[in-house]
Amino acid sequence: MTASSCALWVVPLVLGACSACGGPFSKPEPGEWLPGGDTTNRLLLGNNAFVPPAEGLSADDEMAFFSGNAFFNQAWVEAPSSTTARDGLGPMFNSRTCSGCHFRDGKGAPPSNDRSPLGGLLLRLSVPGPDGPMPDPVYGGQLQDQANDDIPVEALARITHVPRTVTYADGSRVTLLEPEYELSELGYGPLAEGLMISARVAPHMVGLGLLEAIPVERLEALADPDDADADGISGRIQRHGDEVGRFGWKADAVDVPRQVAGAFAGDMGLTSPLVPNDDCTASQTACLAATHGGEPEVEQHIFDVTVTYSRTLAVPVRRNADDREVLKGKRLFHETGCAGCHVPSHVTGESAVAALEEQLVWPYTDLLLHDMGEGLADDRPVGEASGSEWRTAPLWGLGLVKDVSGHTRFLHDGRARSLEEAILWHGGEAEASRDAFLELSARQRDQLMTFLEDL
Image 1: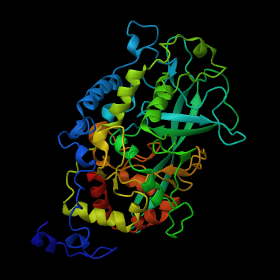
Image 2 (image 1 turned 90 degrees about the horizontal axis):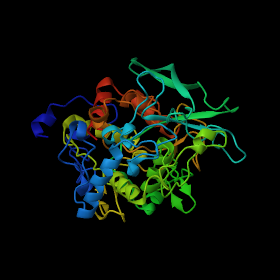
Image 3 (image 1 turned 135 degrees about the vertical axis):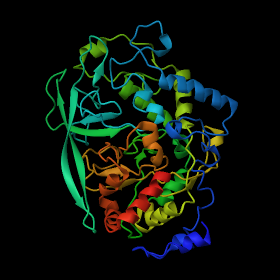
Image 4 (image 1 turned 120 degrees about the vertical axis):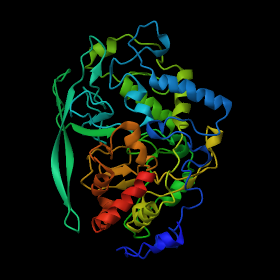
């Protein structure tokens, strides 16, 4: 930014002086242009922005990446088949390919017609149990709305919406849509009393290995479960015994291999080295009797290269980190308190992929659980996460979601139709930040959006 261009900006902002014309937000911070550090994708943007491998991979890791890419994008088929490396689909499933939910490695969304098949949206099912929610005894823990021939589909889903109106301090209004889910055409009998349904959209895939490599000590330093500093933010680590959850909307997976194994099992009905059994319930006799595609169906080599692929998808470069409007938006992001949970940067530690180690990365997350209030609550605890707690979602790549995936649907269930709506749904520990956002002028809100769209 030149001195003359800075001088043109003389309108004071509500939350502070012109700090984008001098001070901590006058220019990008060192390394900020490269959110994935040395591994950042600097070459492909547009609709292929999430496709490239991390820079600096070894020859072996690069070979595994491209092999994993093939299995990620090719369709699995019902067993038995002459395509023995890719048979065993189902018997019930949500998608025939990994890319069916993560098209071009991007983010899923609710279906455009609000009906099954749900595509990049899945529904978790649970019923009350003595120690918390447990899978539905008939339909299991996840609705599978597709099936192989001669296998009954579990059920079909329909989404309806309840409108909510939010008013800014300047009087302008936004209508939010709260989704509700109804199941019909039940394939295995009536639904259990007290059935809980919680929706999940598939997140975009970039930077997973970098998140996995953030040291536990860093997360422990950020955690403040009792809000000892009295800032209203009390992030908690999701612990699974001696391990720390990092992946999934409630941090229910501790590492990339277990996240991948869970997706193979729940989304595609495929057994793997980590999940060797199908999830058919006792009531689903046709599922139990179906032919297997091997034991496991995802062989160790295929599983390993798919994990490497998932770990090493590169984070895209920032496009306009030094733009004046972006810097103003960045200042507002910090002054409204968003960075309290969406912590900008970390340095990675040990990794199964050498290129991902010792990188300064900018994911804008603390990977911790935070209470997001009743508006986003699904009343379905997972591990140590309550029904209103969610893991802070990484923000890198947000501005390229529309280019890659063709939509702008955000939050855990895709209810938000824009980044603005996603902010307006925040409550609980984020209520103060949301209220500060409501006080901004239209111009300031645009500046904040401009910053987020550059991540």
